[in-house]
Image (cartoon, rainbow, N blue to C red):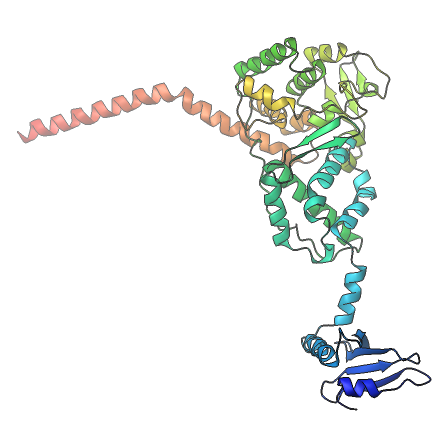
Length: 430
């Protein structure tokens, strides 16, 4: 052993096989001399499990002197003393998958394939337009909850907003917003949960992220006047060619049936039976079908049947509500905000709010939880109970409003009685 310096390194000669010269000052720091004369600085250590490992620092040259190599070796020494394994960590980083690769595997998985077609299409859009640009290049195994929170904020603030070319419609407008941010993070959490189940990840950085609702679930069409303004606006915009007939009819269909947006835009002729007035969505064509394995039946009121009947006829696999171009499903995203504003409907009312309106009004009319589950295609009773509870709160508010006049009269009587009582006391005292 000797202290490795430029002088000692220069005088070391090659042998018939690799030779090692170890530094007397820094334990584990050494010089490897190959038979060809190449001189390489190394650091040798034991892992916390007791395994001996030797990592390469670099070749001796004008850009890497003995003193510089010793400093690197001391840094490695500190890491080992802290219980780390520098070489193992380097190998793990080299073999680690990125968030992009994790998402690629999830999209190709059976779990993803079991989702409804419309859900798959929507999730692919969130992955490509929000998650990949913000988190894709990060290593999946070291992604932190704080990074996920920053990505959520970026999507919410519209930092991923853009216009992108699509095969289906040529050009799509990506807007972001709170709802998109929440759903993108929830999607990331689902992908990580799948990765953990299959051994591709050890933890889920999105699991504890609290994603609140979009703020639209309790916003509904309260009465017939609201519905009237909606339908009048759709007709006016359609007459003025500011909305395509297919888009206007799809919105009418959702408002009348309580269908999910994807169930309406993804509706195909082979699932429609106008004679019986029923739509039968196969398990993979609706949200809960991949879990229950059961079809969803949508009963059509007379006007909804008329809406479908006036659509251009197509082949069994064609969409009922046809897009203007491309092979993808109809998009209602660009049209709805304009319709909502012109109809003077609540600002937070989303297309899902039309479905929520149907559920709430059914509950207020006395429909049971089981009937609501059947009508709305819910899998869990807890989802349906939200409509029941909302209806109960609404009934309570209506009861207060109905009793308001009587309550005013009661308060008047109470006040008169109090005044009379005070007068009697005053007269008695006199």
